[in-house]
Image 1 (cartoon, rainbow, N blue to C red):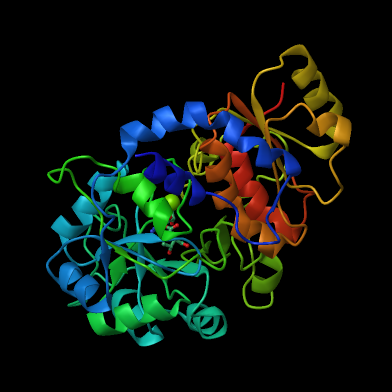
Image 2 (cartoon, rainbow, N blue to C red; image 1 turned 30 degrees about the horizontal axis):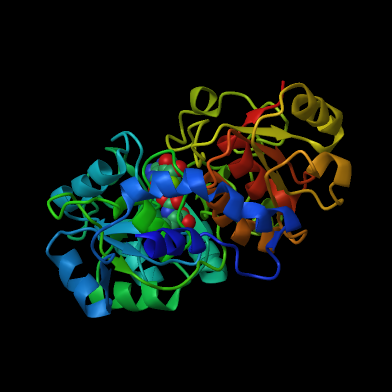
Length: 391
Ligand code: TXA
Ligand code: MG
């Protein structure tokens, strides 16, 4: 049991050089007493289920869900045309039925069978696909391949994406149909960027009777944040969710409505879901660790220091700013992770880092936000949704 416990936590250990664990995290063994108790309860008695391409395809054809790799995050995939398959995805995730899913396809030809592509959409797909761009388009409700109402949350629009992952593309080609795939995490939790994260979400059950999700292992995700969602159903295109395809990259191709709901570029963003019902998935609390998480901007550092002084509880620090953290300040934390100063690398590391800190049985996480720019918009968006602002 001891060995298994250690393995479980090793899986969370940062393993890329860019993902710098501060020296203090090497003091982690001292914290294992708490962690051991927690993991003893949730440890799977059976190996986590893995499938190959052929098995994944067979299960999907039977209407069963399978977790699949993409370049952004792992998706919980099901045949987008089958109501009952899609229903099992909503049920596994605990996702509200008003929040539609993205349909994944492997070619523009397939995209045109389930959505009406205008010249803007075709040009964007030709430029950015396969890649981390999702387009919201009018759905083709007359098509023999029509994506089911449930996957679209009964909207007459549909979100489509061609993922840039060789295994996902091979699977889609072999499956020869659209796969509805939300991120393979339980609703409002941190998205999975590694197969083990999917296991932590769905495969910790102790009995065989409980649902377990087969995983098609494609290694760690290279982008690490969910795709940019671009709404093309109005004359002015709108980014509903920022991602690796930035506003600056999109502007040469479309006129963008800058009153975007994702413009969470202030320390205290408005209540996005209420103000912008067009993007049903953009709930204000999302991607959240279970440990209470508080964010601060670099110019709010004095407040963070005061918080640590007045209430010395067991804290973790996620430092996402490019300037180095002050040594006197960092000494108040049990665990510290620093993201890369390169926004693309930082994006790849974010969810793994949040999961690692979340697994350490801390009382609170403090997050120092990255400076605001076009390149950090998606990173800031996810961090804002994962945290609440410092008092
Ligand atoms: O990178 C990604 O996009 C990942 C991978 C697996 O492809 N998928 C993903 O799916 O993040 P999900 O379900 O977690 O997020 C889909 C987002 C939600 O915010 C949802 O509201 C929005 O896309 N969406 C889907 N269909 C829509 C529609 N018809 N109109 C507006 N928003 C839509
Ligand atoms: Mg999601």
